[in-house]
Image (cartoon, rainbow, N blue to C red; front, side, top):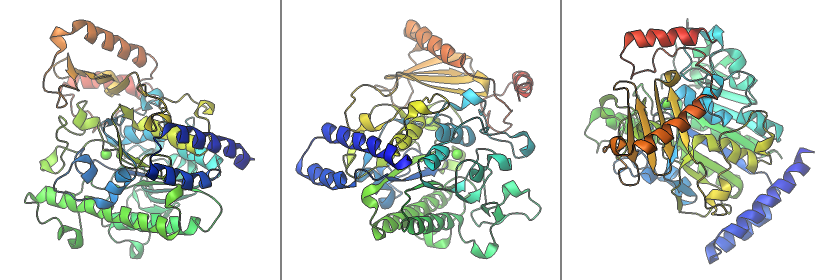
Length: 484
Ligand code: CA
């Protein structure tokens, strides 16, 4: 029954796409090839990096880190140059990504705190995850790497629509795959709830790539399409890389950046192995690949580069909330194209779910993201979003992006800043004082959105880098702890 429902959806997608693309010779050939595939559900590989700088992959503009395998996703797909994530740090960003909804709607506004696992900090069971939908659509589902959507076992991937999980539920891990034997189980590297033996562990990035390749090889021999959520914890701290990668970044003289770059190269090699697996199984024509990071690069010790975006992970300037973003789906998307309208990581849920045959309007909870396919194929020429919003610490800081304009409300100075990102992509010229009407309009738009949200369900002790006022912080703690 699921299959027959899908056939209608897939045919509709194929027809719409054929109508939208410019039919030059190359496209015509590839579309003819894809037409033969209509009726098959695409496999989906969602590759998420951790704290990757906006300009730290080749297709994002890096000059010193070469990533040919990651770049291939953009070169044979679409490079989305104005892509945002819904939070400036890990936990809440992933909660938004996997639900397609602003995570503040369900109180997941900070990182889950490792000391309070019993409290079910993370995405509660009342929310539908993309993996739930994919499972319903007949997919073999697999999560690999860092989870960070809840430390409690009820919130782990295997309870949230994933058939298979190889990774760690928390927010960080040693790249050598070791853990203290006294650690709580949510801190351990596991395979479907069973701690992974140290003999199976090498360099964790290599291990995650190996697991993805094994899942591709295994599932390709069955009739089921697959959905792989491959969430590398690279290049997040700790800075650790084997010599084989360090040997390839000796041209970088700054020590921390050199190790960081080696960690990105490990991911790129892994993506190369995934391409090989797709080709080996002859499924690269019917596999969608999406690549992004969960937040901007960190400002620690000059390791990451977000240039020309202002600032870093943890705040509301573009360096905190922008990501390199590429999407590949052969025959459906024009190879080597660029999309420059503002999109969000929240769009991934409806985009992937629609490709799998699900109608996003049928989701139990209303989605904030939109299906990007009609936009990426120019079937729709309008902006996918009228506005995008960000909020941290219950609104101590927030931001709004509408068209070319971005409003940033800072806590430290308690003031609005307004930027025209088209003229000023580095957010250096604050034009709030001479655009008071626009500031008020965007602030009002934020407040209307904010009124739909709940207070944070827990206090994230590590996230509020911005809040230096102890009294205000205590007030926030009190407000949030009454809302669990
Ligand atoms: Ca992160």
